[in-house]
Amino acid sequence: MAARDGEREFVLKINGKAQTISATPDMPLLWALRQEVGLASVKFGCGAALCGACTVHLNGSPVRSCVLPVSAVAGSEITTLEGVQEDPVGKKLIDAWTEIDVMQCGYCQAGQVMSAHALLSRTPEPSAEEIDSAMSGNVCRCATYPRIRQAIRIASRQEEA
Image 1 (cartoon, helix red, strand yellow):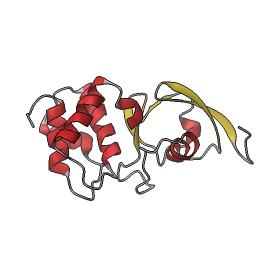
Image 2 (cartoon, one colour):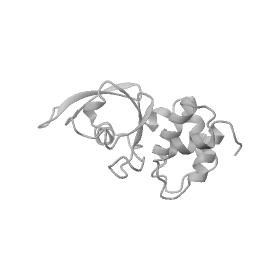
Image 3 (cartoon, one colour):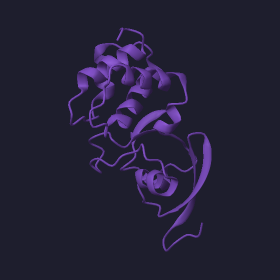
Image 4 (cartoon, helix red, strand yellow):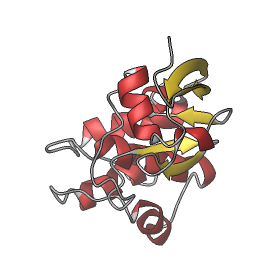
């Protein structure tokens, strides 16, 4: 892939695979993932790291990809929804989301699952306060917050559907 003016090549490790992309150093990771790699689960919501629609994991921690320059993440482990749905915690979350029909429009849900995945990966049986803290900053315009919390509790095996 030939670099255009001002672009450089960056090697990103995305969902366990190294991928070389051409981008300007200040291109937000969100756009690199969507436009250069073709991963549709990462959504643009606000562009200011306020809504959580663009949440991905960077070395296992949730980050907002809309404000993170691609130059800052080269060599780091980046995981998107496409990657977490392949591991046991991700499968439990997606099953719980589906089982109780969390989604309405679905736009924010990838970011919601990414934040919930980070929580359950470090705290397998979180308290209600830990869930609320981990999920704050993920906005759902359809207001499915009670079902999101319930799905997290089901995935953590603290509640039945």
